[in-house]
Length: 274
Length: 301
Image (cartoon, rainbow over all chains, first blue to last red):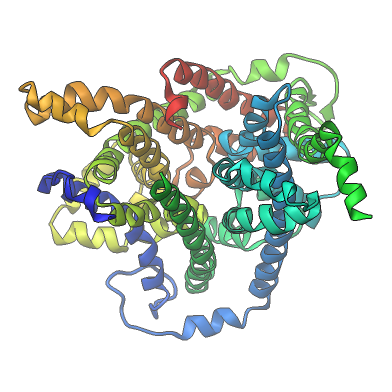
């Protein structure tokens, strides 16, 4: 059933296949190289080929209290920013989906602005506003900044799902005597659950990695990306940085992968239903 | 009890709408638009040259300062980089986007799309860092260049003052490579989306009417994919324009806009000038978005 459509597809020329493969490798190979460098015994330079192999840097990195603090901080920020984004994004999606109102079109525009404009604009705008109000830069100013650009991710995912869910199901539930809360609990929520999961995971990954806005909204706090950033311009702990970068890739890879898988499957089932 | 509450809300859809809409809108209006407004205002303040204290009085001096020759050069340098990065990204993105949209089986397509979106979402900073390793003087790229006996060519390229530097990891060439790499997924997805909408029958019709594959590509596929390229260019251009991590990591002493803003507000403590400078990218992007909309790019997003 699925293979039918692919059988009629033309075959790509070898030049096109090669070019496509090349681009794909260009996108992925650099990230593998970081992993490779976590195994180098060389401390001061990035010599290639590696002069030997060692796994000791993982142990060294895991014993650094400053790294654990940054990791914990990044987790906390991402968790709270994601929670805020889930609530705000779902609310906005529900409002846009269920009713027509004046300015409905501007909502999407407003929500997408923080990721459409360069990060530095969002960052310095927040900094001038927070500084102008004499609010001290803290954990919460980081969270506020992150929430602004995480909302749109949840919003897009949930709104897309709402649009795929047929409104008749909700009507049927109400007709069968369920009240709004029961309908939400037993009909709406199961329907949008995976969209919430996908949106939430992407928002988490986005917040966990964010550095540009964070450099402007953080006080003395060092999130993991800020720690890495300080290593970029003044490399002191090269081997440890490699390990940290690898850890960041691993922590963000799984949520992103599953979020994309969920979205891909959702649009796939939609295609089959058609 | 719950039933009564439920009925109460059911009869008042406007109230429910207000409950749903107020938190996100209030948040975005107050926090985000409020901040943008404060940014705009800050550009009208100035800094006292002697004391370094911000003078909160209306003046056009700071905005005028962004047009001085040094800053004009920064804008020009950044915009040229953004333009070249955009063009090269479009050329690199096209084959993969075309392959995904028109040749990949359904199963392969899902995986290829995941393969493109993972770099798009994954840590931007770590991806920049990867190139620090690759481009390092003693690093992996130099080793390959040496393997093919091309070190002379590299040194020759690096000797040009406008694009060169002491090593790849400290030169505009290095920055260019990293920018192209970092924003590439943002170009692939819109082109793929645009190509996805080109019906296969159109391509068959073209070849039935006697067009050679290249003619079909040139006269049918390329014009239809163009809105996708423009949509992608919104990201590649805008993101390059405002970035400061890459110039700070791989650049030399010549400033880019984002880097200038970062240093004005940080070490310089000149928030008004930093604010005024960010309005440059904002303005350029607004104009760019208006042109892009004319070219139909928003349908490809």
